[in-house]
Image (cartoon, rainbow, N blue to C red; front, side, top):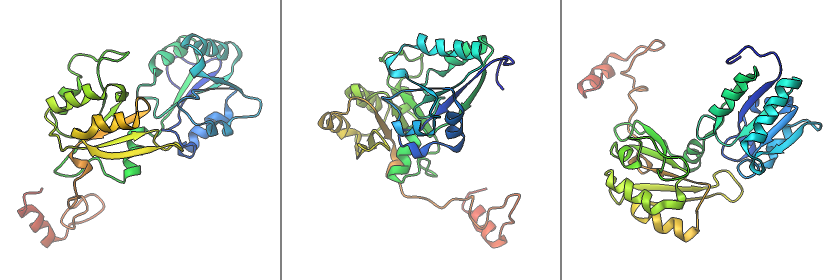
Length: 273
Protein backbone atom coordinates (compact mmCIF):
# COMPACT_ATOMS: atom_id res chain seq x y z
CA UNK A 1 0.00 0.00 0.00
CA UNK A 2 1.28 3.49 -0.80
CA UNK A 3 0.53 6.77 0.92
CA UNK A 4 -2.58 7.31 3.05
CA UNK A 5 -4.25 4.22 4.46
CA UNK A 6 -6.94 3.30 1.94
CA UNK A 7 -10.52 2.91 3.06
CA UNK A 8 -12.21 2.66 -0.33
CA UNK A 9 -11.10 1.66 -3.78
CA UNK A 10 -7.81 1.16 -5.53
CA UNK A 11 -6.07 2.58 -8.60
CA UNK A 12 -3.39 0.52 -10.32
CA UNK A 13 -1.16 2.27 -12.83
CA UNK A 14 -0.29 -0.37 -15.39
CA UNK A 15 2.72 -0.19 -17.69
CA UNK A 16 1.52 -1.64 -21.00
CA UNK A 17 4.90 -1.59 -22.72
CA UNK A 18 5.70 -0.05 -26.10
CA UNK A 19 2.78 -1.57 -27.97
CA UNK A 20 2.66 -5.34 -28.42
CA UNK A 21 0.05 -6.75 -26.06
CA UNK A 22 2.10 -9.86 -25.31
CA UNK A 23 4.73 -7.67 -23.62
CA UNK A 24 2.36 -7.14 -20.69
CA UNK A 25 3.58 -8.70 -17.46
CA UNK A 26 1.46 -11.28 -15.64
CA UNK A 27 0.93 -8.72 -12.89
CA UNK A 28 -0.31 -6.15 -15.41
CA UNK A 29 -2.77 -8.61 -16.94
CA UNK A 30 -4.07 -9.52 -13.48
CA UNK A 31 -4.60 -5.87 -12.55
CA UNK A 32 -6.62 -5.28 -15.71
CA UNK A 33 -8.68 -8.43 -15.08
CA UNK A 34 -9.55 -7.30 -11.55
CA UNK A 35 -10.58 -3.76 -12.50
CA UNK A 36 -14.12 -2.40 -12.48
CA UNK A 37 -12.95 0.45 -14.71
CA UNK A 38 -10.15 0.30 -17.27
CA UNK A 39 -8.74 3.60 -18.53
CA UNK A 40 -6.44 3.30 -21.52
CA UNK A 41 -5.10 5.46 -24.37
CA UNK A 42 -6.16 4.04 -27.74
CA UNK A 43 -3.56 6.17 -29.50
CA UNK A 44 -0.67 4.64 -27.53
CA UNK A 45 -1.74 1.16 -26.43
CA UNK A 46 -2.89 -1.74 -28.59
CA UNK A 47 -6.52 -2.76 -28.14
CA UNK A 48 -5.52 -6.39 -27.47
CA UNK A 49 -4.62 -5.47 -23.88
CA UNK A 50 -8.35 -5.05 -23.24
CA UNK A 51 -8.84 -8.79 -23.76
CA UNK A 52 -7.78 -9.16 -20.13
CA UNK A 53 -10.64 -6.95 -18.91
CA UNK A 54 -13.86 -8.40 -17.51
CA UNK A 55 -16.92 -8.34 -19.75
CA UNK A 56 -18.71 -6.06 -17.29
CA UNK A 57 -15.80 -3.65 -16.84
CA UNK A 58 -16.26 -0.05 -17.93
CA UNK A 59 -13.73 0.97 -20.60
CA UNK A 60 -12.67 4.61 -21.02
CA UNK A 61 -10.35 5.94 -23.73
CA UNK A 62 -8.15 8.57 -22.06
CA UNK A 63 -7.07 9.99 -25.42
CA UNK A 64 -10.59 11.43 -25.80
CA UNK A 65 -10.96 13.05 -22.37
CA UNK A 66 -9.04 15.60 -20.27
CA UNK A 67 -7.28 14.70 -17.03
CA UNK A 68 -10.22 16.13 -15.06
CA UNK A 69 -12.44 13.30 -16.32
CA UNK A 70 -9.83 10.73 -15.32
CA UNK A 71 -9.59 12.24 -11.84
CA UNK A 72 -13.38 12.08 -11.60
CA UNK A 73 -13.12 8.31 -12.01
CA UNK A 74 -10.71 8.23 -9.09
CA UNK A 75 -13.21 10.16 -7.01
CA UNK A 76 -15.84 7.62 -7.98
CA UNK A 77 -13.49 4.80 -7.01
CA UNK A 78 -13.04 6.38 -3.57
CA UNK A 79 -16.77 6.93 -3.10
CA UNK A 80 -17.87 3.48 -4.30
CA UNK A 81 -14.90 1.26 -3.47
CA UNK A 82 -14.13 0.52 -7.10
CA UNK A 83 -10.91 -0.80 -8.64
CA UNK A 84 -9.42 1.17 -11.52
CA UNK A 85 -6.69 0.03 -13.91
CA UNK A 86 -5.07 3.07 -15.50
CA UNK A 87 -3.07 1.74 -18.45
CA UNK A 88 -0.04 3.75 -19.55
CA UNK A 89 2.14 3.11 -22.57
CA UNK A 90 5.71 2.02 -21.90
CA UNK A 91 6.66 2.33 -18.25
CA UNK A 92 4.59 4.65 -16.04
CA UNK A 93 7.72 6.15 -14.48
CA UNK A 94 8.74 7.85 -17.75
CA UNK A 95 6.73 10.82 -19.10
CA UNK A 96 3.47 9.33 -17.87
CA UNK A 97 1.95 12.26 -15.91
CA UNK A 98 1.64 9.71 -13.11
CA UNK A 99 2.80 11.81 -10.18
CA UNK A 100 -0.11 14.24 -10.34
CA UNK A 101 -2.50 11.29 -10.45
CA UNK A 102 -0.81 9.60 -7.49
CA UNK A 103 -1.04 12.82 -5.51
CA UNK A 104 -4.79 13.03 -6.12
CA UNK A 105 -5.33 9.37 -5.27
CA UNK A 106 -3.57 9.86 -1.95
CA UNK A 107 -5.72 12.89 -1.20
CA UNK A 108 -8.77 10.68 -1.79
CA UNK A 109 -7.45 7.91 0.46
CA UNK A 110 -7.21 5.43 -2.40
CA UNK A 111 -4.87 2.50 -2.35
CA UNK A 112 -2.40 2.75 -5.24
CA UNK A 113 -0.06 0.40 -7.04
CA UNK A 114 2.30 0.81 -9.98
CA UNK A 115 3.03 -2.11 -12.29
CA UNK A 116 6.22 -1.49 -14.30
CA UNK A 117 6.19 -1.92 -18.05
CA UNK A 118 8.73 -2.43 -20.83
CA UNK A 119 10.04 0.94 -21.99
CA UNK A 120 10.35 1.55 -25.71
CA UNK A 121 14.10 2.10 -25.43
CA UNK A 122 14.67 -1.44 -24.14
CA UNK A 123 12.18 -2.83 -26.67
CA UNK A 124 14.11 -1.19 -29.51
CA UNK A 125 17.41 -2.53 -28.15
CA UNK A 126 15.86 -6.01 -28.24
CA UNK A 127 14.56 -5.53 -31.78
CA UNK A 128 17.99 -4.54 -33.12
CA UNK A 129 19.67 -7.11 -30.86
CA UNK A 130 22.17 -4.70 -29.36
CA UNK A 131 23.54 -4.24 -25.87
CA UNK A 132 23.48 -0.56 -24.96
CA UNK A 133 26.28 -0.80 -22.40
CA UNK A 134 29.39 -2.20 -24.06
CA UNK A 135 32.43 -2.46 -21.74
CA UNK A 136 35.05 0.21 -22.45
CA UNK A 137 32.67 1.92 -24.93
CA UNK A 138 29.54 2.97 -23.02
CA UNK A 139 28.53 2.07 -19.48
CA UNK A 140 25.63 4.48 -19.11
CA UNK A 141 22.31 5.09 -20.88
CA UNK A 142 20.80 8.58 -20.81
CA UNK A 143 17.03 8.81 -21.26
CA UNK A 144 15.90 12.29 -22.26
CA UNK A 145 13.91 14.43 -24.67
CA UNK A 146 14.56 17.55 -26.69
CA UNK A 147 13.83 20.88 -25.05
CA UNK A 148 11.39 23.42 -26.47
CA UNK A 149 8.27 21.24 -26.56
CA UNK A 150 5.11 21.41 -24.46
CA UNK A 151 7.07 20.83 -21.26
CA UNK A 152 10.14 23.06 -20.69
CA UNK A 153 13.41 21.35 -19.78
CA UNK A 154 14.95 22.20 -16.40
CA UNK A 155 18.29 24.05 -16.44
CA UNK A 156 21.23 21.77 -17.25
CA UNK A 157 19.10 19.14 -18.98
CA UNK A 158 19.52 20.18 -22.59
CA UNK A 159 20.43 17.44 -25.07
CA UNK A 160 23.75 19.12 -25.84
CA UNK A 161 24.70 18.91 -22.16
CA UNK A 162 24.00 15.19 -22.00
CA UNK A 163 25.70 14.58 -25.35
CA UNK A 164 29.03 15.67 -23.88
CA UNK A 165 29.20 12.33 -22.07
CA UNK A 166 29.50 10.52 -25.42
CA UNK A 167 27.62 7.49 -24.14
CA UNK A 168 24.37 5.84 -25.31
CA UNK A 169 21.36 8.12 -25.42
CA UNK A 170 17.69 7.22 -25.84
CA UNK A 171 15.82 10.31 -27.02
CA UNK A 172 12.03 10.40 -26.73
CA UNK A 173 9.38 12.85 -27.97
CA UNK A 174 11.68 14.71 -30.36
CA UNK A 175 10.99 13.55 -33.92
CA UNK A 176 9.12 16.70 -34.95
CA UNK A 177 12.27 18.79 -34.41
CA UNK A 178 14.99 16.56 -35.76
CA UNK A 179 17.07 19.43 -37.15
CA UNK A 180 17.36 20.94 -33.69
CA UNK A 181 18.16 17.51 -32.27
CA UNK A 182 21.02 16.96 -34.71
CA UNK A 183 22.40 20.41 -33.96
CA UNK A 184 22.39 19.79 -30.22
CA UNK A 185 23.91 16.31 -30.47
CA UNK A 186 26.64 17.69 -32.71
CA UNK A 187 27.28 20.65 -30.41
CA UNK A 188 27.61 18.19 -27.54
CA UNK A 189 30.43 16.37 -29.28
CA UNK A 190 29.01 13.41 -31.19
CA UNK A 191 30.82 13.14 -34.56
CA UNK A 192 28.74 12.97 -37.79
CA UNK A 193 29.40 9.22 -38.18
CA UNK A 194 27.90 8.37 -34.78
CA UNK A 195 25.48 5.43 -35.18
CA UNK A 196 21.78 6.24 -34.82
CA UNK A 197 18.72 3.98 -34.71
CA UNK A 198 15.34 5.45 -35.63
CA UNK A 199 12.40 3.42 -34.34
CA UNK A 200 8.79 4.24 -35.23
CA UNK A 201 5.92 2.42 -33.47
CA UNK A 202 8.26 -0.21 -32.00
CA UNK A 203 6.50 -3.60 -31.56
CA UNK A 204 3.35 -2.38 -33.39
CA UNK A 205 2.25 -4.02 -36.68
CA UNK A 206 3.50 -0.98 -38.64
CA UNK A 207 6.85 -0.90 -36.85
CA UNK A 208 9.70 0.72 -38.75
CA UNK A 209 13.29 0.52 -37.51
CA UNK A 210 16.05 2.23 -39.49
CA UNK A 211 19.83 2.35 -39.02
CA UNK A 212 21.90 5.38 -39.96
CA UNK A 213 24.25 8.00 -38.61
CA UNK A 214 23.88 11.38 -36.99
CA UNK A 215 24.75 12.95 -40.32
CA UNK A 216 21.84 11.21 -42.08
CA UNK A 217 19.29 11.46 -39.25
CA UNK A 218 17.37 14.54 -40.39
CA UNK A 219 17.03 13.30 -43.96
CA UNK A 220 15.88 9.86 -42.78
CA UNK A 221 13.14 11.29 -40.60
CA UNK A 222 11.91 13.61 -43.36
CA UNK A 223 11.96 10.85 -45.98
CA UNK A 224 9.73 8.59 -43.90
CA UNK A 225 7.66 11.42 -42.39
CA UNK A 226 8.24 10.28 -38.82
CA UNK A 227 6.81 13.16 -36.83
CA UNK A 228 5.59 11.23 -33.78
CA UNK A 229 5.74 7.86 -31.99
CA UNK A 230 9.46 7.75 -32.82
CA UNK A 231 12.42 6.97 -30.56
CA UNK A 232 16.09 7.62 -31.33
CA UNK A 233 19.01 5.62 -29.98
CA UNK A 234 22.37 7.36 -30.39
CA UNK A 235 25.91 6.43 -29.48
CA UNK A 236 29.03 4.40 -30.32
CA UNK A 237 27.77 1.27 -28.53
CA UNK A 238 25.27 0.75 -31.35
CA UNK A 239 28.08 -0.33 -33.68
CA UNK A 240 30.71 -1.62 -31.22
CA UNK A 241 31.69 -5.27 -30.94
CA UNK A 242 31.58 -6.94 -27.56
CA UNK A 243 34.62 -7.10 -25.32
CA UNK A 244 35.46 -9.84 -22.85
CA UNK A 245 33.41 -9.44 -19.68
CA UNK A 246 35.55 -9.57 -16.55
CA UNK A 247 32.53 -10.72 -14.57
CA UNK A 248 32.54 -14.10 -16.34
CA UNK A 249 36.32 -14.35 -16.69
CA UNK A 250 37.75 -17.47 -14.96
CA UNK A 251 40.10 -15.14 -13.10
CA UNK A 252 37.23 -13.24 -11.47
CA UNK A 253 35.81 -14.41 -8.16
CA UNK A 254 32.65 -13.61 -6.25
CA UNK A 255 30.50 -15.07 -3.48
CA UNK A 256 29.51 -18.14 -5.50
CA UNK A 257 32.67 -18.87 -7.47
CA UNK A 258 36.39 -19.09 -6.83
CA UNK A 259 38.89 -17.72 -9.32
CA UNK A 260 41.31 -19.90 -11.23
CA UNK A 261 44.75 -18.84 -9.86
CA UNK A 262 46.51 -18.66 -13.24
CA UNK A 263 43.61 -16.81 -14.85
CA UNK A 264 43.48 -14.48 -11.85
CA UNK A 265 47.14 -13.55 -12.29
CA UNK A 266 46.61 -12.95 -16.00
CA UNK A 267 43.59 -10.77 -15.32
CA UNK A 268 45.46 -8.67 -12.77
CA UNK A 269 48.45 -8.26 -15.05
CA UNK A 270 46.12 -6.77 -17.65
CA UNK A 271 45.19 -4.01 -15.23
CA UNK A 272 41.83 -5.41 -14.11
CA UNK A 273 41.07 -5.88 -10.45
